[in-house]
Length: 310
Image 1: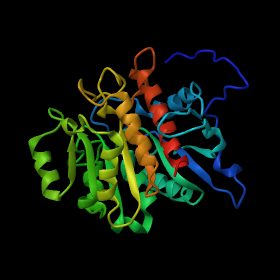
Image 2: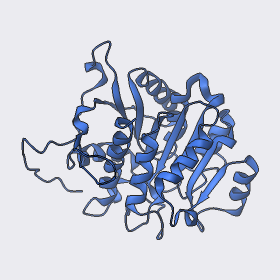
Image 3: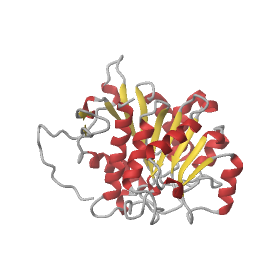
């Protein structure tokens, strides 16, 4: 996505350029903390996903923090710029055991200063360290919701294995819900693995005719059934390939952009969701208009809108 000169209007504020957590007063807390986790070395598909956190931060400058009135909800405009957001920068070399340890520690520290943490990936391997850092000693009661076309139950350590790795770490698979699982994107063996573990799968075809907020409410009732923290994994390649050409594994016929945005906002509005990640975007493979990165940036804002409305 090429750099462009953005207009300046004092009455049209822009998002992004958020301060670091170190600027917070000792007694203050933020609504949301951002953290770049540019992992890419174990990806099953060639990717430059490590370039994406910087690209998303740049794209955020294109948008305003305003929620405008509508006929069924807000009577007045809301300026999310009044919500405190901090940006903790990027985890250095997040791949591998040492990198994952750094990510876990950083996420845990940020949750002491913010209501929720959002990790900007990076490939889907970042889900493991981000979730474990957020769960801390509450892993036994924690839950996971994924928005993804793929089960991510592969053997080994890669961007195709985070759900399996979390189960092996102690996450109860009966509190895992996977939204958007698609035909022709998975193997029958891994489908059977998911069923055998007791994972709840909401197939892509089940989403037709359903309100995204209702789907997410159902998912969170399952993931949050034990009263523990919930992590939201947003694999952007769940979307239609026309929407996200910068996702190596996206397929024609995936989620529409509005569906992804609505699911993310609904998740952010639930206080049980303490962490989230945005993954599987290769900013260097995006279309010239930057549509994949722009949608990813909007998901940051949708999650913030949800958190702000709690």
